[in-house]
Length: 139
Image (cartoon, rainbow, N blue to C red; front, side, top):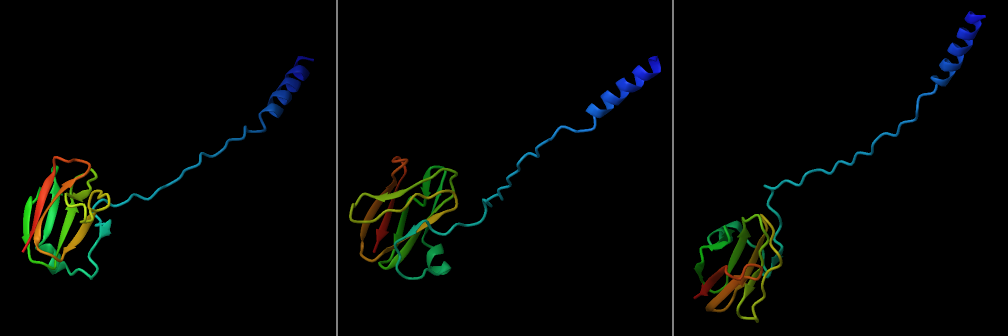
C-alpha cells in the first residue's frame, strides 16, 4: 500500500513538472552609432556657387574652446568664409549688421559658409554665447 501511495505521489508531481513556464524573450533594439569623426554637411550656406576646398581652407575660422580662431580675418570681396565648429557644444553665428544673414545651429563638426560680395567690416558673435565675438574685414 505504501508503495502504491509513493507511486501515485510521484506521478502527480511528475505531471506538474512536464510543462515549463512560458518565458518571453526580451526585445533588443540596436541603434547603429553615429560616427563623431565624419564631417557633416554644412548646416547652412549662403554661398550660391560651389565651394572648392582650396578657396575655403585659407578663409576658415575654427570655433574651439568658446572662441573664434582667428578672431579677425581679412579677405577680398567675393571671398567665401567658412566657420567650422570643433567645440562639443552648439554655436550659432549672428552678425551685428541685421542685413547680413547668420548661420543655423552648428553642432560639433558642422560648418557654415558665407560669401562676402562687398567691402566693409562685419562683426559677428555666437548668439548662444555672446561673449564669443569676431570680425571679417572685406577689402
